[in-house]
Every structure is written in structure tokens, then in C-alpha cells.
Image (cartoon, rainbow, N blue to C red):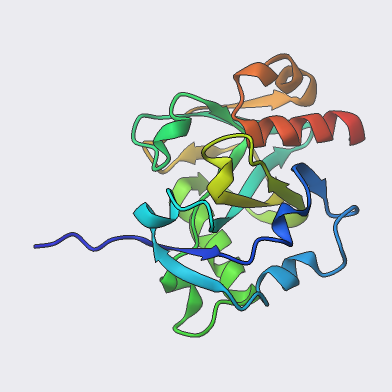
Length: 204
């Protein structure tokens, strides 16, 4: 039986996204920036193997940072990570692609985006207790092969307690670090996590 290919949400109209490089906080972003992303008419679901190689498209990725008190969740990407170019990198971001299942068979909108965000959290982690989501900014990084075909929407997830375990083989060695400890380990982080840690060190 032929394996069904994963389809992921991407946009070819990337002028809005390419207007900056690195991390842009919500305070510095245009008003309704997130809403505008989902009003772009050239959003489409593509086969992932095509989207990963075609730099005309940016895949839209919810990227969640987990915080408890003054500690942040950090983990190592395992060998079964869907993004092979990031294997063995340390990361503070949990997230993934938006799939057709999130759209409820209608045009992808903000409701569908948040369905994707919550689905990814539940697929990746086992969380004991309640959590609250806060949109904090956006990431665009065309300096790496991964970054050229992805765009990150960054959320801070405030968790009730630290009883969080991995639900995926690609998430390994979960620990909780202070911001200072993350700063000490910044060179081991994937690029998106570096941008966020640098922003937090300067602004928290």
C-alpha cells in the first residue's frame, strides 16, 4: 500500500514574513500580524517533501516555549525527529506543522491555527495540570537551510507544574533551566531557540 504523504500549510506570499530576520516580538510586529498571515490568499497545503525543498514557500510553524515560574523547558531533538537537519540540537521550542486535519475542511483560519497548536502540544508532550498560552512574537531566519522554508509563530506556554514528560521519541532529556542557565548553553541551541533566549535575556 502506498504511504500517504504528509501535507503541510505553507504560503508563497512571503513579503510580509521576509520583512525581518530573527525574532520579532509581538510589541514590535504590525497590528494584527498573525491575522494577516491567515488572510494571505496564496496559503496552501503542500506535500511536505516538496515544501521542505522549495524556497518559494514558507511553512507556518507554531513554536511553543514552556515556562514554570522562572524556569524554561529544554530538551534534545532525537534521531527520529521529523526535521533531520536539527537532530541532536538542544531546543526550547515544541511545535510542528499545520495539517489539513486542523482546517475542518474549510479555508485555514485562526481557529484552525489554534487547533493545530493545541494538537501539536498534546502529540509532543504529556502535561500534568493546566496551562495558559501567550503569543509573544515571530521568527524568520533565512540564514539556515531549515529557516529558509519555515516561519515560526512563537507562544509562551505557562504551565501549572513541571510534571511534563515526552510523548515523542524525538523529544529527549527534558530539563528545566533558568534564563541564566539557558544563556550559558546558548551555543548548543538550534537557531530559533537562540533568538528567543537572546530576546528573553534582554527583556525579561
